[in-house]
Picture 1 (cartoon, rainbow, N blue to C red):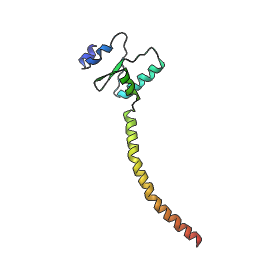
Picture 2 (spheres, rainbow, N blue to C red; picture 1 turned 30 degrees about the vertical axis):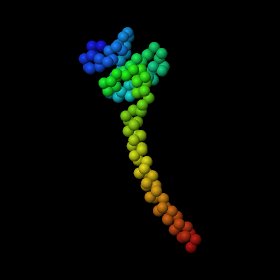
Picture 3 (cartoon, helix red, strand yellow; picture 1 turned 90 degrees about the horizontal axis):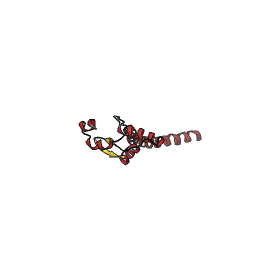
Picture 4 (tube, rainbow, N blue to C red; picture 1 turned 120 degrees about the horizontal axis):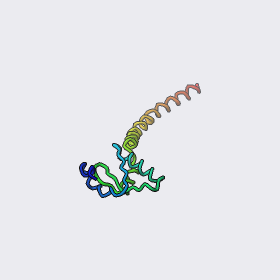
Length: 111
């Protein structure tokens, strides 16, 4: 409780009652996913809350945070979305040229 108060997280000191486990990670989504996954298989672990970006979260907030994609997954999805139009454009540009080549090849076979 003293450490939470000294670090500006006084909002979560009420969560420190009885035996308490604290997990920490620089990647808040990964920490939430790990704890929620572990809690699924261990009924003795009860999630009561957490902190993300200095804001207190209740159990539902931690579970919601665990269900969001990680930063790396979000970046990969964004890159995929940005690359899709470019690859489609390249396919469109290559298609007419390929058709012309096939028509010329067909005429060459006939003659």
